[in-house]
Image (cartoon, rainbow, N blue to C red; front, side, top):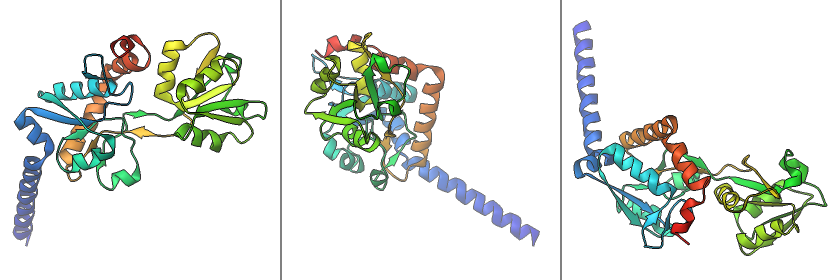
Length: 266
């Protein structure tokens, strides 16, 4: 009986090993390594994640992440510009291997594609008049407080949900909404944190202050096709590595804490 049990266990072990090798052969990661090229789909219209410079080159935070990823794989990087409304379909159709395009992880999207662990949260944050420095967002929820934001964006949704007493004033553009604050006609501006970081790098001064605490949770992830555990494992470990060895912080500071790159696009 023991001999039969040992034989069965040995057979199952060999079967599992063969199945694992079959999965690896079919893995997108294996195909990338064999081909020597990583194809990344993105929509170059979300500053500073991905955008075109004056020469037409696509640059940005996500581009640098993709470059670092390709370097870690030992392969060449191929950027595949794709309109955002068709980007998930393009991934499913194998037009590229990954999406690195400031794409928010949602349960609805996750039904069609898989996501890595979040590599950034682009939740809403507040830029406030300097008199509120040292306060919290709750201190702004008063009837005599005016908060500006862009019409129809997540910032408006979050503002109306969190601030029941303050006056919410919307504008067609981010520029108009922030100008209201700079002119002293508003107490705060609420919008995507990456935009606010960039705004502070460009125009921050003694008159305004940034509350960097996130008011909402909107995680960004790297998207890949379903049924590929080897690739997902590699991507998550890649993110752990660059966040642990300082490469991520260097790129984050380059694109979100400095405006030196603006001369390349303006």
